[in-house]
Image (tube, rainbow, N blue to C red; front, side):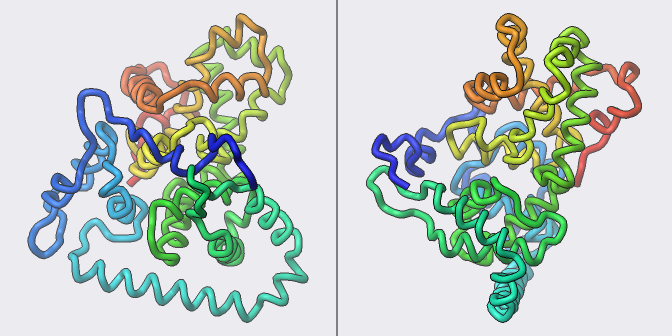
Length: 334
């Protein structure tokens, strides 16, 4: 797909890495200081995830750190154990790929809808940098999406996975790493972005949260019809990927989802906070679903959004929280 303006180029979305306010993210030197000579972590899971929540990860360590955050590596593993795991992940991926090659004719006849939708999505995906050079192998992406479709019966395939997979493709170097990181991300976030699993639950919880926290706003949204909240599903099905212009912003948000802090289902708190940033404009201009998606897409940098969401969790009085929403404030997922 052509993009003469270059506004969608990968290099543009990877440029201008944002620094955290006041505190710099964890860089290579600090990250390496978390390990002893055998490669065991000398800092606890709670310590490291709290630091990641507060400061984030520098690009130089993100690909390695995400292997711990997703469960690709065990937090208690040594360097030698991780090398063994790496070999096992590669071997298992190669076995899955061989299996898919054997059943390819069946897939082409019995699962034609998947092939059609996936190919259409990948054709529209822009994968060139500002100089017009291809940064991503679409054939490789198609293969990984096919394996995910065949092997992850919970998630299957939905439109938007190709865009999410692009960020894992840019994060990791090896094909097996891309596949497993994507799978573990879906599992670690409890399939929150999957339409037939997490998205519906997220929308129900978002509606309940708005009614609890902001009855006036809830009444306005209800007056627009039952489909207004439902129309916000792209936030969850893309894990907010389309809200931000920079891939670094998306990675920063996703790594917070991975650590499971400050609470479970934090993505719903983020959606609520995102709505609050444009609440007055929504009321003033009498907006409905599609308009809300458009204006919230200009919300800006994720750091104020993250901290606004975090303050919401930590400042809410537990005595006032309905039982249906209590898990937001009392459970951290490990």
